Image 1 (cartoon, rainbow, N blue to C red):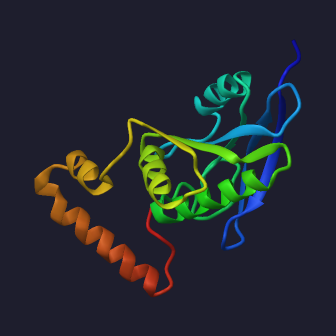
Image 2 (image 1 turned 180 degrees about the vertical axis):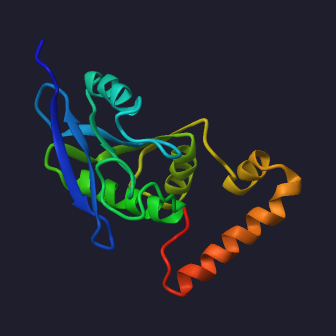
Image 3 (image 1 turned 90 degrees about the vertical axis):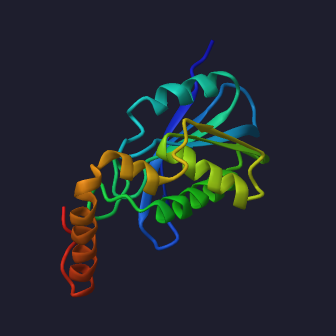
Length: 178
């Protein structure tokens, strides 16, 4: 039995920033049904998702796994900055990249996201009709509510003040606070 083909790929986000990932094809002629995958909060493709992608490739799917902007191999600064709406927009571009590949059956593409990216998967599934299937594994439904559970109620006013101060500092040209 031959091994699947793995390619390191890159494609531009809507704003021109370069996103990078791994595209895998199963053995045999295409075009293949495909899945686009991304990791959850603060993780990169090498943390678990590539192993899952290999299982899907072994089942006959082409699979694109990308790192979100500012994470892993993808470009962007400040590093490890999480902007959910940009990540969703970028994932939509990953879908466009995947459907443009001649090895992929553009009419049979699904999306898989875990944790924070599971919430993104729900948004994309509800708004992008090109997707034929969506898997949201343990999705983050409300990032705001989830973050409130991680901060003691007495500390919320100080956190909100720090976030607001950072926003004002960035307006004045300062880099984001880390």
